[in-house]
Amino acid sequence: MQPGVRACVPTLLGQTTLSLIWRGCLSNVQNMPVRSFSCLPRKMSRWNSRDTCSPLPPQENPRVLITGDPSFFLKQYGTENVILSDIKKPPPNVYSSGPFVYADVLDYKHLRELIINNRITWLVHYSALLSAVGEANVALARKINITGLHNVLDLALEHCLRLFVPSTIGAFGPSSPRDPAPDLCVQRPRTIYGVSKVHGELMGEYLHHKYGLDFRCLRYPGVISVNTPPGGGTTDYAVQIFHDALSTGHHVCYLRPDTRLPMMHISDCHRATIEFMQSPECQLSLRTYNIAAMSFTPEEVAQEIRKHLPHLKVTYNPDSVRQTIADSWPIRFDDSNARRDWGWAPAFGLEELVADMLRSVREKRTDEGLPVR
Ligand code: AKB
Image (cartoon, rainbow, N blue to C red):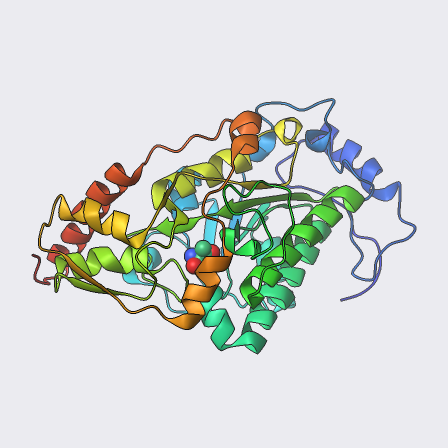
């Protein structure tokens, strides 16, 4: 990519705003980093200014590019405004839900082409290797989770995009306070996944403070969803147990029965993400927030499932890698800043989560012609 100045021109803004931005962008061209960030100085548009924060800025009609496959933005903003991307063939329900393109987060030029050709204003970056699979392939995790993230950060800055990057309970380590873990504390994770997430949090915040990048990051608990199959995470058991409960009736858990971790129903996670992305900047005292809903152990979730399926059998066969990871993560999240700043409140507790997951997994298995207990 050529060094030089590029202008910050968010496409959804009108002429007056545009000229304000233009002046802002060109007023500080010295000290330009090599990949020529265009949104200098800080406060790259009036929507980023604390003095002029408006509850309904034009960015509420964003054009969104998503790396990784979460399709929930489609529902909120419509198929004409959202493009999903991945390097994997999407499942039929994702493919048929709206525009889907091949995009590799390691291919900077292709991502840039997608952003320009589709007049993207929000970039939502989900591509990452999770905790357990990352430990099995550290080099790949470093590439996807760190090099991929750098591409996305540079592109967001270059094109003045609002950028969302999820972080996780995995961004904490054994020396962090565990019950609860606050937003700001010691973070010394012991996985490449956690290290890359802390790196992402810090890089995003740095670029926000230095250049005005509209970086937003939520630390997710373990997310429980019927549509996202277990994908190499440490919290995966809490999804698998529902499938096992309704198929064989027997779950073999790779964690000890008393391993308590923060968890969240997928619909709360989606709602939190959309609400956070829509929050006016003036409400955000942080750029990275914990969000919480509930914390449970394998034994507690099994007990709740047994209220519906009394014959569920669970045996415990702790896996040393995943158990060590889980033991280093927070037991509970303190999300009081998210609640205070932008009104975060979860809707699902353990009881509601279990009832909903059993209903959804039953429906899915029935649709797929699979037997259900
Ligand atoms: C994992 O277990 O790796 C993820 C996470 C908690 O970030 N689900």
